[in-house]
Amino acid sequence: MNDLIQRKQKIIHIDMDCFYAAVEIRDNPSLANRPVAVGGAEARGVLCTCNYIARRYGVSSAMSGKIALQKCPELIILPVNMAKYKEVSKSIQQIFHQFTPLVEPLSLDEAYLDVTDNQDFSNSATLIADEIRRQIWQKENLTASAGVAPNKFLAKIASGWNKPNGLFVIPPENVERFVVDLEVNKLFGVGRVTAEKLHKMNINTCNDLQKLALSDLIHKFGKFGHTLYLQSRGIDNRLVNANRVRKSLSVETTFSKDTANYQQITAELDNLYLDLVNRYNKIASEYLIKGQYIKVKYKDFKSRTAEITSHDLNKENFIMLLTKLLNYSEIRLLGLGVKLSSNDDSAESELLFD
Image (tube, rainbow, N blue to C red; front, top):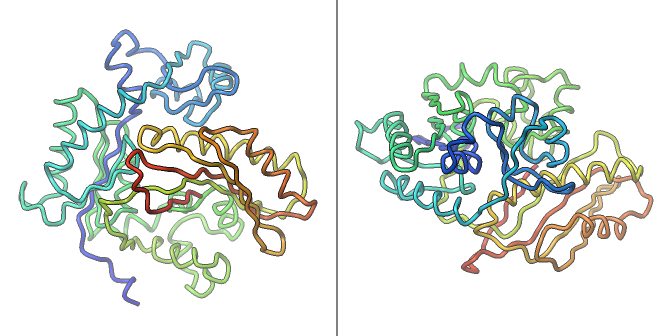
């Protein structure tokens, strides 16, 4: 199988530390030692991000402002200033493009860079990543964490390994050793439900996952089983795509047991909605909403979708669409999404988040 051979790449994943909050604290140093979040403070507001001081209280992104204030009454919640964050992001993107044209932004605050063919800094991706972080600090007075690895999957994991303001490198010769103890919930595409399913199979690490044959994984997880097989061995041959644009954004979950319980379904809708809001807030300056849709997969694996024209995220719209699709049959999957148009009307592809 050709995809079992890792393509020779040098990939850097840059992730800005608490980006929105960090920009606000930079511009108002009196906030430096206080718990700070960015997002909505009202009852239905959702946080986009928060600083590490706030995280010590259990505050996190995608959390409602109301709950965040219950956890941390001293929390300062600032309104989103997307225009400012976009300008800072442009400045950081300019730094990236000094080193390679192969830059794939994931949002305003993170990106993949392919520096395989960069001959500067002795062709060392590690030195390039360090220089990028140094220039970001020098130019914007903001810290960034970086991961360096032979592929996108491992580079993204690595960037979170020494956060904040850290650098972690996984050289090709260390990949096997690194993935053996890697927890399965770190794998790309493994959400809460998939992780629970793996744990029930006594699969907790990639080492456990490697013991299953490819045919078994495909039988249990469908085509995603092939992805699990490759990732558990540290293989990911996806290319850095410098021209990627989004056509839609969605989140979904598979219930551990098929259910027709309306309260359980709407509780999961609430969780998905918060996740979708958080993900959209990261790209809101680049993409406009032109519709909302909901997807339901029933016990018999048949799927139905319903959508509505909309120009903002509205939970009531999702609830209304849900009632159209619920027919008292048990469902196994629920998904929420938004249709997007880019500011330059050039959207061509779709991203699905699990």
